Image (cartoon, rainbow, N blue to C red; front, side, top):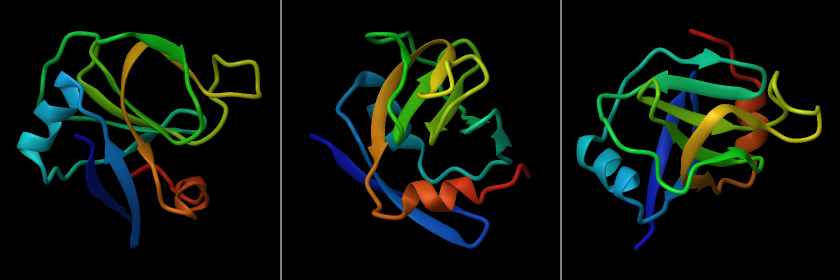
Length: 117
C-alpha cells in the first residue's frame, strides 16, 4: 500500500507517496533521514543507508519521480531535464528503481529553487 512521506529541505516541505516496492519498504523502515543534498542537472540526490537490488530498472523518468539508484545507494528526485537526457525529460545516469512520486502541488517549483548543500 502506498505511503505518504514529507521531504524537508532548506525551509521547504514537499509531500510525496512511496510505492509498495521492496526498496520503498526498506526506506520507510529507516525514516527520518538527514543528509546533505547534491544536484545533477534537475535531479536532487543524496546517499541513504540502505542496500537494495534494482527492481524494474528504468532510465527515462517522469518529472516528480522519486527513485533509488542501487549503484550508489542514492535517493533521487527528478524535477526536470538531466545532463544525459535529450533536454525534454529527466534521464537517470543508469537504471534506477522508481519508488515514488512528488505529490505536492508546488513541489516541483520548490525543488527548482534548491541549491546544493
